[in-house]
Length: 375
Ligand SMILES: [Zn+2]
Image (cartoon, rainbow, N blue to C red; front, side):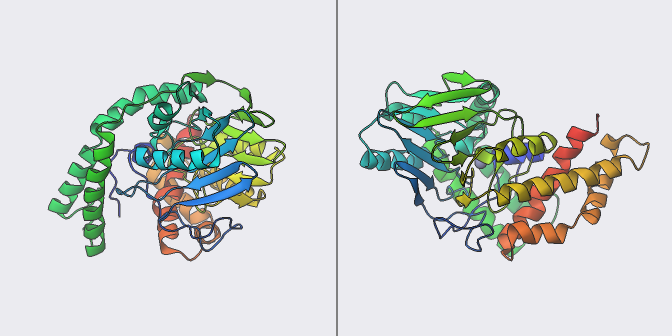
């Protein structure tokens, strides 16, 4: 079923994103049965002395919210990602003030997707003098895309109401009773979110970087790095060498990667560079905190398997690959071990499996095809 508005995976991802339910345990190992693409409750995990990860429940319209990481130094605080809802960001700020009286001096936006940065204005209001940092390309996309996203936001509910009226989803398939109920919940939730966004004053990054930016928070070093394209054109990560903590943004998401767009061919190299860093704790953009690099390697393996299969199909015919996307997609889904990959990422959870089948895998194939066919 396809309930999301938008003309491409990239747009669907920007405008919507399936995701969420639970996340009941705080620190979980690879393939934890408790982790899910849905998040129902707010959880806080201490990663080290003065370093915390906050996971947020999905917004009322079922939009997933990115993780936030709070890093407290002797002189200042760095926050990585301000999540989606201003109300959630304000809740985080109240929590930070319980942890420390140091000011939040820096806020990093790992990338331009709004589920990681629509809380920016809440931080700017709470901490005068705040510096908001992003990769140069991410800052450009935020300036280009966010205004229209905000103005168009109420149209999401219009699209959902149209589906209810016609009884058909975006692909023309008939709605089930479960689909109808979900659409009604999303319509109600969209109204609730719009009540927050109507007054939103967007706050753009005021410091950009291209390759690396080191921050000294006072006896606490944080390295901000751009390791190459992947999830977007401007993914930034944060790395704490002493604490061996790596904060990845959506280059890594658990338990199922968000692969509905981006640059998966380049992402392989980016993830390999990331895996060279000496890190033991990995905080993904969504999902549970990870220990060790096994999950990152699993994501690399999936990307490489699909890219090999697409290249093989591209070579099968002299007809230009851009005219054969559907054919190539079907062949790739037959030639890679979809069942095995689904099991590795989604386990037995039907919602995780649905996310893998309807978002991650087709999005990966479409994006990798787009990257490969001109070469
Ligand atoms: Zn995200």
